[in-house]
Amino acid sequence: MSNLTPAEILPVKRLTVTLTNLCNLDCDYCLRVAETQHLDVELLNNVLVQARDYGVTAVSYTGGEVTLHPRFQQIIRRTAALGFSYSLVTNGWHFPKIAPVLAETKNALYRVFFSMDGATEQAHDAVRGSGSFRKIMAAMALCRFHGFPFGVNLVVTRRSVASIESLAVLSARLGADVVQFMHLLPTSEEYDQRLSLTPDERRAAEREALAVDAILKIPVQFAAGVSMSAPGTPCVSLSGETVHLDCRGRLTLCCTLSDYRNAVGEGDVVADLRTTSFQEACERVHRLALAQRARRNAALAAGHPEAEFPCHFCTQTFDKTAWRTPALVQLGRAGQGATGTVAERVSI
Ligand SMILES: C[S@@+](CC[C@H](N)C(=O)[O-])C[C@H]1O[C@@H](n2cnc3c(N)ncnc32)[C@H](O)[C@@H]1O
Ligand code: SF4
Ligand code: SF4
Image (cartoon, rainbow, N blue to C red; front, side, top):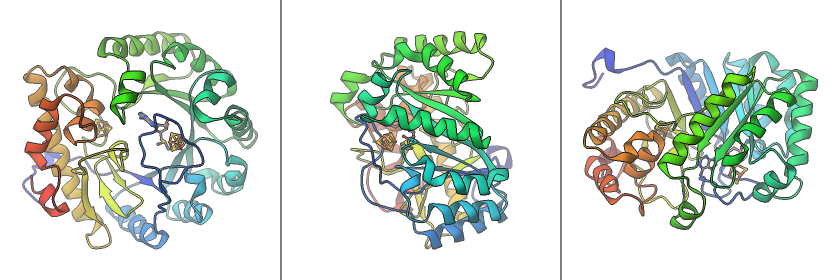
């Protein structure tokens, strides 16, 4: 396989899948393009079988809003029947509709992740719309009733940064078994100015999460994107362990970068799985991940401060946030080109 040495490749263990880009909400900071685009179920079935044969053991479903995929129940049954463990992330609005199929496949359900924007009804609904807090509280109650493991996600912005502790305490009280924070990845210059924290403020938020983690009995942690000033592998996508299927049927490096709102480049897309095998596409992801790790290591050595935040570094070098740090945008364009065919983009 290719020009990679075995030490540079970790086996693919997890597939993240964007089932749909459709959503019932309109969170202002949302990174996903808003459109009615559902993943084709026949293609997904085919990819799941190939993925299982390739050694993948876990599938994570995201969106858009996964519960809006017209064949969601069939997808979950098929995922469990193929022997995968699965998880999903949701805004909770349609949870009562999907609870029966989760109960039916409970042995395969690893965890449900609910996304919140604050510890109060006012703070959460200010971002997610009226009624959202009550719906998500009801969804968590249903999880407790059925014994579904669940976690809570919070995007840390200028608006939500003060709720790190209160959100973690509320989540623990509600029965969550993990709390995950993500730094905001901006989708426009306006939202960047209005909602992003400075690098120092992001580091302070990470320290706050660590302090709360030390007091609570459940893990309270920053997910991928947490600061890392050393060179190396900052996430499971760049280690090659996780690959992502988008709702157009393409394999991409990472769900975070996929169908990114207002993006210029799509260098994270490696193959159309209608015409390329899962194995070949995974090998392309591995080459891309290796190149991206090398790019970040070089940027760190050159003293680019944004290279310390791996997801911010990816959004800039994959040309998702063209208004930010021109030097990083150019570094990415030099490596992969902002345009061109998928085949051209992956020949790095
Ligand atoms: C795109 S959403 C899709 C799943 C579902 N609709 C939800 O909100 O949970 C997946 C996760 O990405 C987070 N997210 C959305 N926009 C983001 C951004 N600009 N930066 C960082 N995380 C973001 C959401 O809060 C959610 O936890
Ligand atoms: S963050 Fe989730 S709920 Fe909010 S608009 Fe995006 S996809 Fe929808
Ligand atoms: S955006 Fe980059 S650093 Fe962040 S999770 Fe994806 S591949 Fe990893």
